[in-house]
Amino acid sequence: MEMGEQELEEVDEIRYLGYILQKNGSNEKHIQDRKRRATIAMKKTWSVGERIFKRDYKRRMRMFGALVESVALYGAEVWRWNIEERLDRVKRRYVRWLLGLDTTTPNYILREECKIEEIREKALKRAVRYEKEKALESKKELVKGCIKERERNWGKGQEGKRARKRKMRLEEAKEGRTRGEAGDRQERMTANQIIEERRKRETEEREKRIRESKYNKYYRNMAKEGLPKYLEGKMKWEDRNMVARFRCGNGTRARKHWKEEGERGCRFCRKGEGDLKHVVEECEITGGARNMGEVLKETGEGLAELKAIIVKRRAAEEGEERQGGSTARK
Figure (cartoon, rainbow, N blue to C red):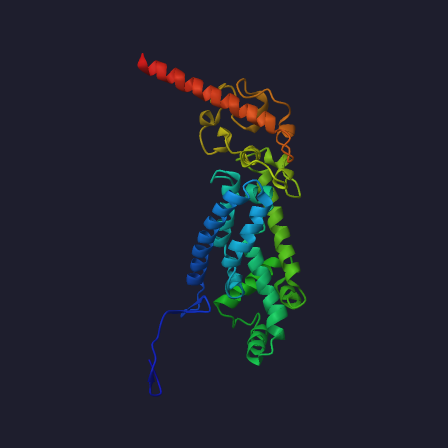
């Protein structure tokens, strides 16, 4: 490509100030790069936390916010309207590692138990704040002119792909209003209002999924508004992980709801479905503890009973192995 007497090289992408700009206007390469870098930072952060703050869940989550989210959110003012979920997977993976949870633990249970604020929410907040509070106050007339022109074209079918996505996300945040009302009120809504409306809708959807959950049908009675107390203070990581796994439904055969009924039954007493209530209260081998709700309280007070269940389960498993070995020798 030539410009005057100069020959210019035309490229498909360029990295400027750490942001990958693509010729086609996509943010895909940058988001992939952010996910890769955030994953590397997450693994290093987890390793440091294991050595220094192993007993302190809240401090390790603050470490994630400072060392990993800052990496993931770089350039969020540009890609913000994608509501990118890939970066949230990095955070959910980190929390699963902290609590020793199975990879099959549903996201709706994980978010409710740990009160996770997702990265996409923070990105959306940055986007709205930038456009409504920073860009329009910019001293650069070109920046203000571009934004005002886009607002004039709002609803006239002249938006590009990115602008249409932006418009759709704002209208989603204002669900329940007509499209015209959404456009009229756009200027008056603050970032916090948009995020709050979106969060409220997602909370309602999450609560519905918890009520209808087949993975752990008892979790609906355990969920609380705030962070569970066993995650608040310092606690041995083995004890904290044990409480989290039981509360989230890990370690029970009934969580594999897609399998045949016989495969979901208790493997020890063979007399019932291997769900939380059966394991804690009813099973002839592991049961006998007090009320399940008391054992699985958010305070972690039922830790002694949970440890007893684990001991009984391991003893039963060892007995099965010995019996199987003697049968094989015969």
